[in-house]
Image 1 (tube, rainbow, N blue to C red):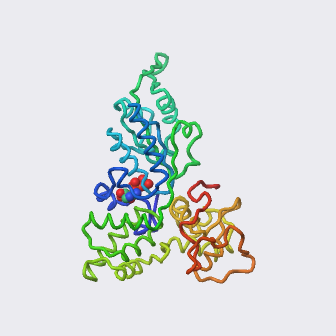
Image 2: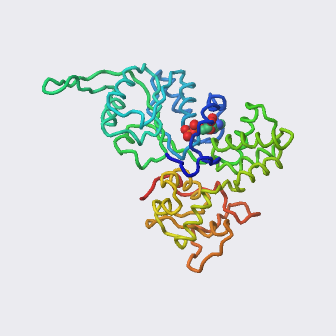
Length: 373
Ligand code: ADP
């Protein structure tokens, strides 16, 4: 995905180059170190224990949800728990059927093939993958022209772990080949705090609980964002303060990065302002919003929208996106007469009562699910 107009965005949950260097260090290795996603972990534990008990390879698994929530990390964790090798690839990297054949013929029994962005596999590649996933066979054509022959190769029983941010773009035949589908949700504040404290320990940065809490509440419920903000706040603490991350240093550093107390940055605010100021609050399509602020609609769809939906700042209707009264309140903009608070955009009964902000972690409807454009 392109982030051409916001290259220095600190809260993008998409992977940046600097993240790659530290990923190995910060990545939990076992399920026990993996914080949050309790229900998913419980289900995954059963899946792993059952496969181990039967001494079988694991069923094919699909993780779906917004970027930065730990899909790749979980694939590594599963490989460690199963004590097998893992090979990493991504949908766009497997261009031809032959590329996939080369990967699959090198797999050993029980090995895991992790396919990131699995919704971006080409049609021809997908066709080869179906029998490989279902019957562990590879149908290939040898030779060219009239002499070409179909050959069926037997494959060892391997496991594919797929990851996608766009479940709806996955073709139905591919989706049904995965025996276990797990949706990853944004993390709760407490889980992100634990992740920040663990990360600070690994990076050897002294941190106070208030500092971890400030970073966590601006991290959009996303571990990758939390760990990136931790590094930025560490820089600030080293340059402008004593080196320790206190509540005060965290607030000062995050304010300087223009990340507000709900984790919204300039791009989020520009999207909301565009909907409200240019399109009367909506409904308006994502492509139109993107064009109006010179931003890729993919970036808005993958990175901005899920979080704004989760906050209850956006509503998705069949005619496009609409800003809710919460969005107007957050931006300090007057609510026009025609924007009537509806049931779904009323603040949650269970949201924290001391602020009128919606609860970040109140259950939202398909916040990570797919687009209607
Ligand atoms: P995704 O594949 O969903 O985009 P990743 O697995 O690459 O996300 O995770 C992004 C970063 O967040 C990694 O550095 C990883 O170590 C960290 N991370 C993700 N989930 C957790 C977690 N539950 N506990 C600790 N760190 C996590």
